[in-house]
Image 1 (cartoon, rainbow over the protein chains, first blue to last red):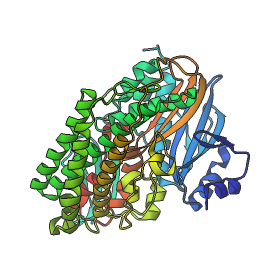
Image 2 (spheres, each protein chain N blue to C red):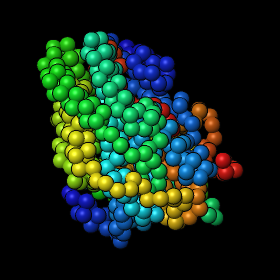
Image 3 (cartoon, chains in turn orange, purple):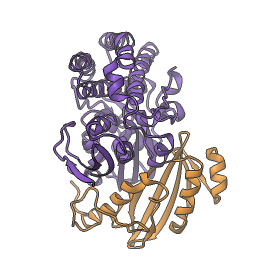
Image 4 (cartoon, rainbow over the protein chains, first blue to last red):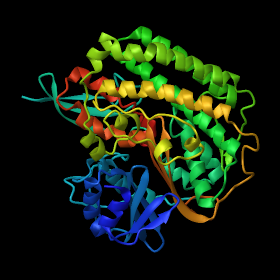
Length: 135
Length: 358
């Protein structure tokens, strides 16, 4: 399956940018998207979390197909749980654990979510707690 | 009855701290778990509190081997948001630095792997060769590790005399083609230690999302320099070595062949080096926006995401290094191998824990 066929199969309105193709999605649909990506042999690349104003969060999942970046982005309220894609892409394990460490996002469906970069027992959300002074 | 062996965080095979706990039945590994984060420095957090000029120096310190690729990727992300055009000469100089860095990284790895295999003489010969790359990098930048070459819109220093770089690229290509590749592919010690060891199938390579030489050694034919050309990579001729065995030997061979390709690229870039400026002027901020840039670093794809609100300080800097993508696949590689092969299997990833932990 090509990147274009994969986009068509996933559906929705994709936007082409200089860095690849982007799609706004509901976080609830991310497992379905991940399954289609795996079928198409897309490589999982990364999860990016970003704090938005008014306690909102932007979360994006990124895949590569033959050099083309396919990104699914979701806006959600802070504290909302998001489905895990680890059962589909084991390579997403560290990305989810790191996102929890930094932004306290809870990924549902995992057996456990141990810290990755923080120490055992540290409270998740290190980047949220420390919106400190400019250095 | 199975038993667990903790290895690390201070390590028998690698200089950097990380921990792997292997579950064994007799000599055979039947499970493993990994622990990283010992080098966590919060570089992304810091970069969201410094101005972008300061952050170039900060991000160059993500990795002690591929330092240049991080400052370059950071600058290229800002250049993409700001729609800033890099002068052609600046692009070519960035390519020379990137390929020299690949040579130095691959030779470092080949040396470490030789020592792990028990081939001390080869280790010393490879490190002698690697020294010459460091000398070439020093002749351009004045530095051997953090080169400070990148700025937003180009590079800080010109290559005024390319003779040292040419000489090094020719010497490395001759030794790699004449000695290294024949030796690594025919020597009985190397084959006995590497063939069929630490196999990662193509299917697992995709599921784990591995990148770079690790992916290419498992039959995944991908290289961003060819698939999504940046700088002037679309204008030079090079091959992307791919192997299908997915074992340690395949990773050895892919990296050795990539050394030759990097030498070819350096030669072509120096031959076609255009005249003109090396940067686009003084740039201290970019407009509001966000962008992703991906670069083929020595260990594979580096992913940079940056969001800007138009000030001189980024809202978000996300760095996904190749080792972060590659290390989890150790769990699949060590399964059903002997405990004695675990250090070599890990080293065959060419892992960098400073990159991973950031």
